[in-house]
Image (tube, rainbow, N blue to C red; front, top):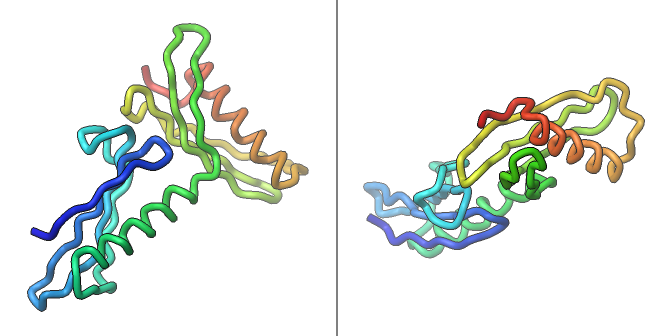
Length: 151
């Protein structure tokens, strides 16, 4: 088995483990876990069979770049302490812009996925900066009221 590399970023633990094919080439692969170790819930896994490298470290470097890019696609990241019970939730969220803009999130508590709330802004007159705040407010309110969140 090829040598793995790992690192932490934005409250996630990323493990890169290239796959070695019969022809001796290495294919990049990464797994992203929510939390500080690979014992936490896996959020995303991806392998790139069309990419090949001559060494495991080169494949790992490429996988790390792609994992970082994947995490960057979630522009909203944060934590929220629910007033009713004091539980701490963390979330990753994203949104689109324009009429009918949608938002969605992945909400975690203690490393476990608790829900994936989402919605649509039917009449969207927000600019990019304002829709970020609106989407984050919707995520926090979903957590606060338990909408789309399991306890």
